[in-house]
Length: 212
Image (spheres, rainbow, N blue to C red):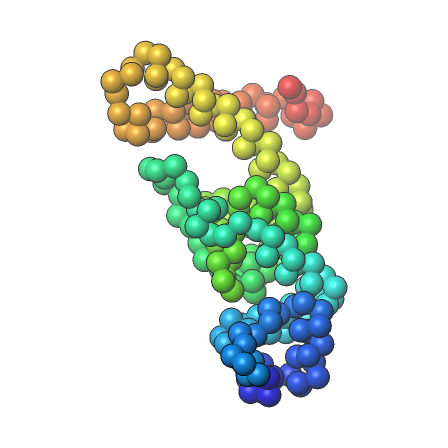
């Protein structure tokens, strides 16, 4: 414990306090000896970084609980092959940098629930580089991360419906075709229709608002 505290730049008393609050996992024990490892050190450095960014210990405890309630990376990244998405590994600090001030326990829990994030040891895995980049760009433009995640959940519903429509069409009329090779056709149809829908709604102007 003395060695771990020294490497983390904190006191042993602080380390014990973090242990009591459940902010770091218990050590591996061999008889009366308690062994701490690099995972404990990484967690302590993460806590320090979050405190420096203005998070409270209660907030950090909530974040830790949300991390540990998430599915592991293997389960979350078990996408149906083939997939065109590239997962991204991030430290908690890097994730906070992408969404400055917006990585709250509530947003983290929502991202875990959507399957956007998974936890693998001391790393966070985002399931899609494209979704990560787009989400961060929207937040930089002033859209709250909570609103981005809520929109993502709605988009997921519509995307699932479109995927089922496309697969039903192919199974009914092209059962001998390799569906994987026809993926670009579905994507092109959706992209073209979305582009035209944006044109129509933008032409109406902001006063009209969205329609259903």
